[in-house]
Amino acid sequence: MLHRLRNSLFGRAVRPREATGRRALARPLQGKALTDWYWMPPNQSPGFHSEEDEYELRRALNRRHTKEAEAEAADAGGGKKKKK
Image (cartoon, rainbow, N blue to C red; front, side):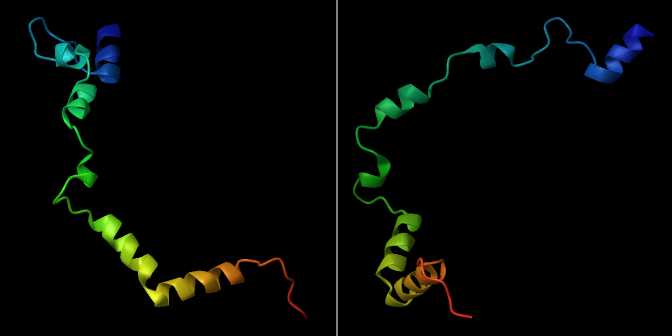
């Protein structure tokens, strides 16, 4: 009875010599070694293309969007109360 209850809650037990990935998960992470390999951040290297950065730059330079941002800032409560 206890064995059936344990299996229903936790699944079946791990068998001997079964590949569980425990050793792979116990290894130290290699992220630091990989980041040290790059001598220059990828977004500053020549030929790197970042669509997000270009989109933000174009949006900041676009006159229509800057006017919208200024209007939103004014509507957000410039400290003045509207007359009734």
